[in-house]
Amino acid sequence: MNFELVKEKYASVGVDVMAAIETLKNAPVSLHCWQGDDVGGFDNEGALTGGIQTTGNYPGKATTPEQLLADMDKAISLMPGKKKLNVHACYAIFENGEFADRDKLEPKHFKKWVEFAKERNMGIDFNPTFFSHDKVKDGLTLSSPDKATRDFWIEHGKACIRISEYFAKETGVPCVMNIWTGDGFKDIPSDRLGPRVRYKESIEAILSEPFDKNLVKPCVESKVFGIGVESFTAGSAEFSLTFAATHDGCLPLMDNGHYHPTEVVSDKIPALLAFFPEIALHITRPIRWDSDHVVLYDDETREMAKEIVRCGAIDRVYMALDFFDASINRISAWVVGFRSWQKAMLNALCMPNELLKKLQDENRMTELMVMQEELKLYPFNEVWEYYCKECGVEPTEKWLDEVLTYEKEVLSKR
Ligand code: RNT
Ligand code: ZN
Image 1 (cartoon, rainbow, N blue to C red):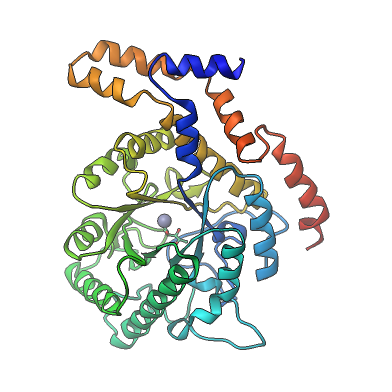
Image 2: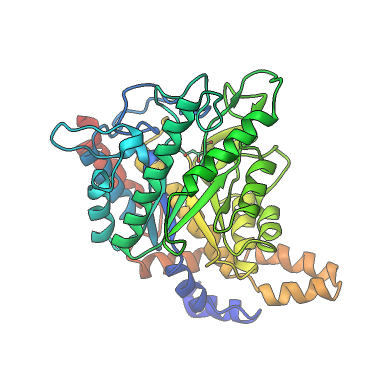
């Protein structure tokens, strides 16, 4: 369909397609570095721990900072929209044979990331890494009964606050710093309060590190269970939400893989927005469990985006992707996931939200149902293609050709 007709079609229900496109162009989405190497990082040789898992051994994985940055660059070139980098502490880049343990990390160990971000006009988000490390004692970090263990991880958290502030100062964009640990028990514990009180006090100790609340946005991410921590997690939903609600400047972070299967984060977004000035999201695709499959343009993904847009909360919700698939081309995984979220956001921005809200408020539920169904077949593909072209990226599936060429020329030689 001719794009002028597409615009008219949307305008007939009160949607300004060009305004939608402009809005999306300025809404940053955080791109996680850890899809590129199966959450490996550069500071350890060991296995991935913490109750998370990657499966698959697709060839060509990045094993050095140079490779990871090059792969990310290739992926970024195929994604429309505004990006922010999401870095984990285990991705510190050490130079000239030096090494610093997690409690001794400094801004200089992330200089390369800052250079990369600045050259591409991106902000940076950050994550302390409370897993894949020998100081994780019996599966516990900040909630451990062992004080030395807790202290080590508290120092790590504090170091990460300093690094987050450095990112914000360097890039001029606030840094979202997300605290997630895999702390928990495989089998039924006898004390559920002790670990949570220790976890609370440890996070408080981390946040006692001085920082500018306009520059660093600490979050706590909840989780219902993990592999090997099926019976109990210290950072449960109630724990994390209450922590954020009672600690000024701390945001709740919801990962849509971290709830019981019939719960939906789309419904939780407005619930939290009724109380918190800002919230954070990890956007993923759980299949039967927190499997972290690549994000697709599916129903719940679209619903989450719709809630952010309908609530008028694009600048109150920090959107970050969090998935890792080692069974397919990793660059393609990044690109599919990022494009899917962009599609979901653009679709949400092309909804006649005022009209739909009016129908609901006037209890015209028959019309509401009909309208919502008919909107599903509006000529959205044309809007998407136009948006991609505006952003200078390939609008169709042809983007994969570039990834396959890169696979042949670069990845297959690793
Ligand atoms: C794990 C959490 C967490 C991690 C990243 C790597 O279940 O979702 O956010 O995926 O920190
Ligand atoms: Zn997450």
